[in-house]
Length: 123
Length: 111
Length: 147
Image (tube, rainbow over all chains, first blue to last red; front, side, top):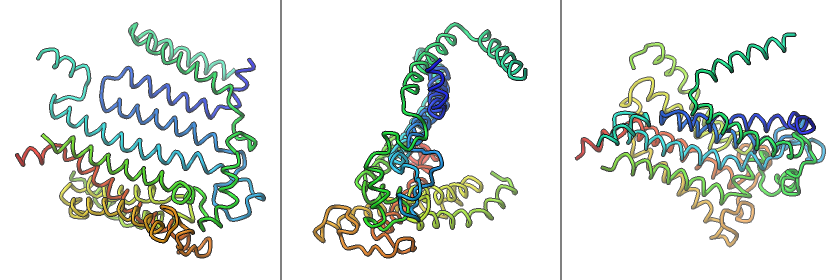
């Protein structure tokens, strides 16, 4: 019960974990390769949400300094700026994965993993 | 009363979804639920959300917020962090984008 | 695609998206945004043209060689701006130490190297998005014709 109360206080992180679990379930169960790429993006987004949520403060302003820092409470700028790297890497990985899917479609004529396994087993 | 009604309706839909699944699908849901269950332990151990005394708010962001304008001249602290304090990291990001284009062209335009 | 509504709407909206992208790039040190987000907005406007008309019309907006030259030039400009610091005698990618004029905080032309590097990054990210889009959507057709 104590743990449930703690989780209820940290519900932002729970949403991140929910997104991660949804992405993982999609990645495991769906055989469409495009859906697998989208699921990977959902998992990426959950990690970004988790990191950015650690930097939030209640009532904090965006980190654009217009007043001295000890007068106004600002949101932590560090997780947001670190996650920019992650977003760029996610875009790059998505582009490369999509190019591989295009190549697979040209070769097999389908993007469904089960059908690709069938075609490969017949050869 | 409405809450109980909502829970009952949700349970009915969840049961219908579970009954339509194969044994493998049930196993996958159990596996993924187990992973989420163990992750939620970590959430319970994390410091409270939105508290300004969290360990995330150590001396490094404080230094950025206080000295950022005099060091870099930029009002936007995120911009001053990614392009001045940690500019080498951003150069790495530009390299990652470059390598992504190279990989896509090597995959698609080759025989 | 031959949809009149989509074409006219995209033709109306595209200049505003591009101006907004340039605004986000140039105000990267004053407001939320920066080289990556502004470049993504600008690249998305070019992708929108290519999607709502066809690929030939989109390629007229920015040719493939221009996009690749801009993409390499953005990365090169970033490195050269960093090497200014080495030439002066400060660290690589130094801002105030390299003698860039910081200006008054809050003005448009301020923050020295941050302004320059953000502009280079915006150009690079916009051309990266366009190049990735064309390469993926054209697939292997071109290489199939070539050999």
